[in-house]
Image 1 (spheres, rainbow, N blue to C red):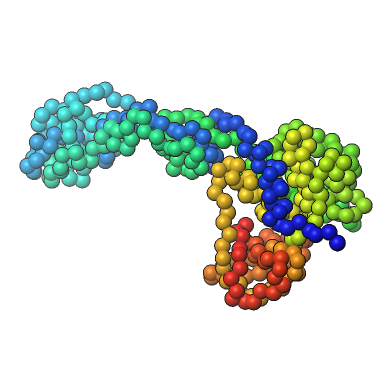
Image 2 (image 1 turned 120 degrees about the vertical axis):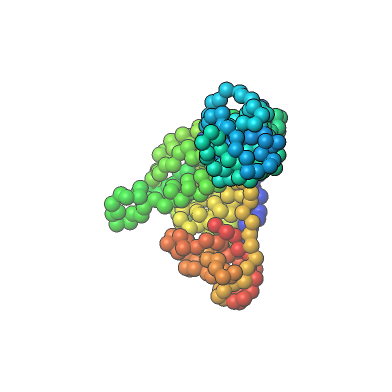
Length: 396
């Protein structure tokens, strides 16, 4: 029997095929409101100071410190300045100007007395307690001076970054274009979710799961299609997929049965279809069609999800600038057995500082997969792991 390719060997081949396609992508300009989660390729720089003008930190009275240094003192009030458009004014000595939070502070004023430290009187306002020079005044540029890098290039944009860019007056930003991914699920037995099932039919899990996994990893999904075990139909779908995408994922049709449509179409084009020493996810393949990488995943839904997580999630996340999902080392809560010669990816739940196996090894156990939040990585040479042993755990 021919030696099966290891997980690491297959991962290296997938990376060599897919990596160049994912990394040869231009930047695109998007509205700031649509930039959440994207990776910035050009820094956001302030054109002017932030704040752009001196303003009141709280509701109160703009004053000259020399006039309120000794309290209590009653001073006349020259009006009210709300937040919003204003005419530049100068505060006369011995006077106050009532200001609202965010309102411009007039020239000559060097502090704001909070309204809570005052009392209205006929003919003016009594200042009950003094404040220090500069108190409750936000100086222009106190947050950022002109030319300051507000958000550095290659930042993965979170809401706080969008807020800073908006404060700088930026309406759109240059971000890394997301990889365009197409997903083709195959099988005469597969029908769309929600369709009534006849004997021998199942609902399409792979189209939903793989497109969601790719989107979660930062991809733009351009096509999700379902084809029967008909080579002509698969070829037509594949032509559409490679025309629109940077990466095509197929599910099913790569095993050793009589109706393996992906194998039938792609092997004559030079596809590498083989068995990997892993469980679940043994049958795998890849090809290049018109310069677009096509990664062929197994048809069993848990196998497809595990295979994506192991082989493709790291590549897509790296392509969009997301940090890698690092494995953890945790104690195993319950003993487990594993077939020797295959690297096992068992489903597990992390709680109380340990990982608990859930469900069995079957590649059809979609509900058990839904209850897991990690994969327990059992080496190929291991057939038994005792409870309490340290294991490598890959978060889902």
